Length: 380
Image (cartoon, rainbow, N blue to C red; front, side, top):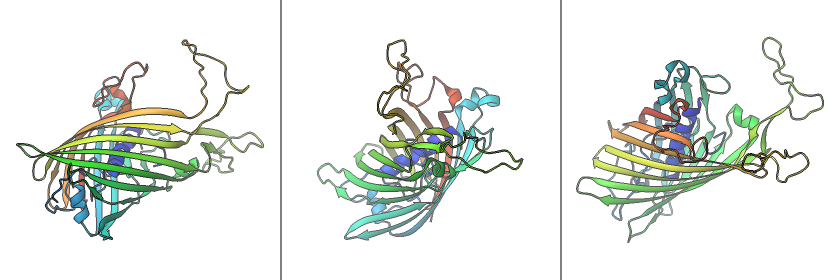
């Protein structure tokens, strides 16, 4: 899967998890490796102290109270197409057009008077992805999929009567089902999220505000993704891995992600039934396991122009931000669509001196951090 597709799919999916994902799964989201895909549809939203009217499970936007009213088994399917803006810079070098397909199976019921939902995504948050243009993936493949995910949530568990705020908790478990995760030694990623929603009546329609938070912890057999010795060969008889005699590790791909944190704010304007305009912003921080915890005789003593050591010990951290604007609409009681502009990029510019513009990565469109897309989702 190319970098843009992974980032877009992961982020939208994580937002959906943190906000009590709608009955339809996300179709397209990086805080951690080895992690699938609701489309970039508008995420589940808010409520008032008075329960809203029952909505179809296939609506592009569902409030937590509407989700709490659903019961039984649901099957959702989504197809996303993403076009990176780098395509318009130079299509010969940076063209990026991808498709994402995902499925979501959920069961909704009530236990002890509280709504309860359990869902399963066989292709995970990112789903199954195929790139039509020249593949950007490190392995040169056009296709990829992500680890399976099990999600538990309690829609509208807490309703604060005075403010009208509704709180929904969620718990997620990632099951390693990809070659990349097996290679990294992933056992599982465990995540806990909270979503807070509130409605604001306006002269025209309703404004729905949602704040979501999500934290995940990665469990691995090793803190690093290590290449082990193997006797496997390619069809031409070449050794797949070259390793020194007696070595137990032939190379390190990367340090695995231990902790990932995300916060997001989404505001949806419901102009009329079945039409939703959403603006969203999110920040993510990821901490990688440390390569070395202390400075020793093997630590490079080199310093940069500011006098700081170039070799750091302890956990490393990366900060990213995202922003999106989307227009969602219900086509039928079961099918919805979404048009969107989505950006996911490092928080700071390459020189680390300023914050990037969140909605469009104007400092580097060729990187395809920004994309436009269209999603179709169906729930039955």
